[in-house]
Image 1 (cartoon, protein in one colour):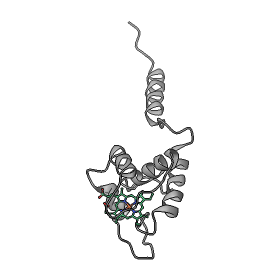
Image 2 (image 1 turned 180 degrees about the vertical axis):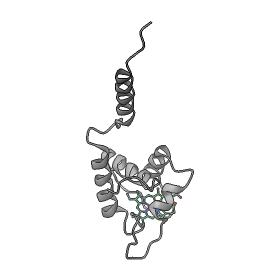
Image 3 (image 1 turned 30 degrees about the vertical axis):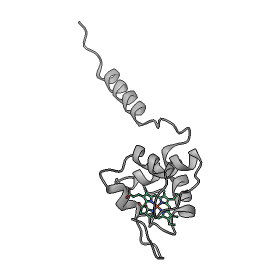
Length: 118
Ligand code: HEC
């Protein structure tokens, strides 16, 4: 049996990594999607939430997005459900599917301190 050339193996590993990193839904690169999410958040959420890692001026009645991102219960699914249901203190916001996905992506990205800032 001939040994598999290591060049071939590393090409396979690379192909696997690339496949794993490809975002499922978005046609645009993940970074663009988060930038979009951040823009939506600053428009619709920033009067009640600190939306970024940096301090933000104003009075806030909701938890910061970084805190939300760090809660163990926060998943894409949970955010989806939350944003589509009615709450006592937070108004129901009319986000379209694309805005919702972008905001969710953005919030989840805040959990990782290493993730590139949008
Ligand atoms: C008018 C104020 C207001 C606006 C605007 C607002 N929120 Fe909130 N939000 C709140 C308050 C108050 C809470 C905490 C109480 C609650 O859970 O209802 C909250 C809680 C949340 C939570 C849940 C945290 C948990 O405990 O699970 C998420 C997620 C969230 N907001 C996301 C958003 C997003 C995304 C937007 C913008 C699209 C937004 N909020 C806009 C007031 C607001």
